Structure formats: C-alpha cells, structure tokens
Picture (cartoon, rainbow, N blue to C red):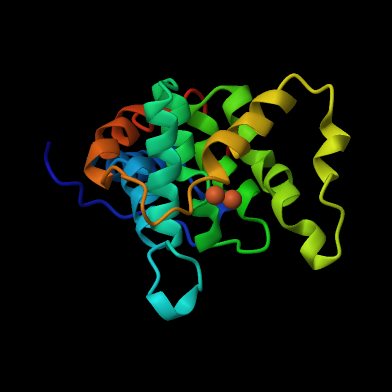
Length: 191
Ligand SMILES: [Fe+2]
Ligand SMILES: [Fe+2]
C-alpha cells in the first residue's frame, strides 16, 4: 500500500469536507489501530520495582498469575485474556481501574465478560474493604444478577489467589497470541 501523503484543509471540524474525511481515512487504512498492542503496553505498565508495592508479586506478575490460573482451569480463551487484562486500567485510572479495564475490552468480548471485569473491583473488595472501614459485602447489591456468581468465581478462584510468589506463573509469551486473536476485530464501534 502506498504511503498516504494528503493533508486536510479544515482547522475546525464544522468545516470538514468529504475530501478531508477521505484523507483521514487513507491514514487509518495505512496505519490501522492496534488495540492488542496498546493493551499489551498497558499490561507492561503494571510492572513495578520492588520498593513500590510491598506485595510478594507486582501487578504484572499478578495479572499473569490470574491468567495462568484461569488457563489451567480450562477457562475459554476470552476469559483467559480477560483475566490477563483485568487490571490494566490501573495504569490510567487507579481509583477506577475495573471500569477502565472493562472499557478497553468491551468491543471485543461478550456482555458477560465485560460485566465481570467491570465489577471485579467491588467483588474483590470483599477481601480487604473492611480493613479500610468500608463494607466488604458491597457486592451483595448485585446478588441475583446473571453475572453475580461468575464474578464471585473470577475473584475467588483466580484474582484473589494470584499473589503467590511460589506459583508456577506462565510467561507473557504464552498469552500474547491469545490477546492478539481476541483484540483483532472489534464487534462494534462507539464514537
Ligand atoms: Fe483489580
Ligand atoms: Fe487483580
């Protein structure tokens, strides 16, 4: 494909023409978005130096271990990738990380997977919110929701167990092809 070289004429969007739009599209076609690469970059951003966290494993290792546990429990590929990427929102939204992670995944996964990742923060808070003086049972407000049990399970079996320095965690290379497959084609687009 020839490299695009055009330039738009507009300086404000209410002056954009169809020709301008075609110029933009030619760049999009030549340099398509790479959501898998972006997600993997965010994942890499969870790597932390030892003195930054006080846990026995950092958040990248935690993510790999969450995915390793899901994979060994024979979860489907979408769920394994969701387990790998469930905390990437921490890189841009440390006070709202579950929502940020879920939105990155949303165009590529089922409503159910989206819901689990979106709510895992509140469900996972069961294990520590009381130490902060909050209600550890905040997740109870979702009891009866079709994804309630699945989210409990996600946290119990994989997320909350994935802080073990002695666990045989799989390397990122085991999961990267899965990320690239799942995040290759969005099911829909939102402006
Ligand atoms: Fe989380
Ligand atoms: Fe987590």
